[in-house]
Image (cartoon, rainbow, N blue to C red; front, side, top):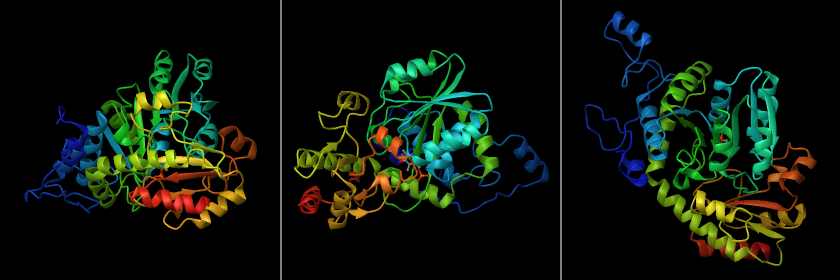
Length: 389
Ligand SMILES: *Cc1c(COP(=O)(O)O)cnc(C)c1O
């Protein structure tokens, strides 16, 4: 498998077949596993083998298939599947940190990520320094000899800033800090994060991996020693494991993810180009446009602009008017879905940020985030055009 390309791994990676040799992966909806003898139970609790399971919070065959499949296509040694993307972000950070540790993070983060870094970790005595993730000088001066970890979204939500994984990793590795990347907007399809220097990659599987808006899920990917030695003990005892049914959905999602995400990214590029310069808009933000401040970096790091774009309608009233006129695009807050979804970050996903922080992150009152789905792109362009009218 290791020589195969991503698309092949996304279809065949991690398969474990039962005695029936089924083609489609089986769902093992079981929380427990039977031991032949009391001695076998004792031995398994002491050290479980590769295909030996104890309790679904610790591991399950369907969940293990999902972990192995996505680890294979991401180029990671191992992975731990979680109940949601936030369980993955929290698990990656909390499992490795303790009071007195220092973390450097980019400030442009998804609201719940910001909550973990700003409110939860600091409550337990972890010191967190926030930087503008696109400014390498700020990373260089914030990272100290005793920095334990750096954290950032490789493409930020919702303003689509792209952060240089290679350059930030080099700065972090110079002091032995662990690089944890929330890679949701890059998607596993356009990600080469581990080869570019990330030690740990985190995904919300809720987004492009499921891709059909059905279930919450997440994954923490990294070196086997980190995943099994640091993450697994924390996750299995604190209850953030993925359910087998969800793992089965995510496994099937991975099979079509490459086709879906490439089609969505092509439509996003087309929409961004169609909207660029529209007189009702102050700007269009999309890393695939040549006027995006990190366009060259996005192309080098991901090879595409991704599936999400943003545009500024000028004011909240105008943004609401556009949202309310959309006929195909839904007003909701997921992304990476087959259905195109428009979000007003300032009043929903990023509502709790103080106004000054919204300003500094570019979350303006007129900003709309658009997650591009699988509809015909011509219909989407028409829908946006009539809404902008
Ligand atoms: C959605 C999202 C998360 C959280 O994922 P959930 O599955 O909703 O818990 C974390 N980071 C980013 C960048 C996201 O977009």
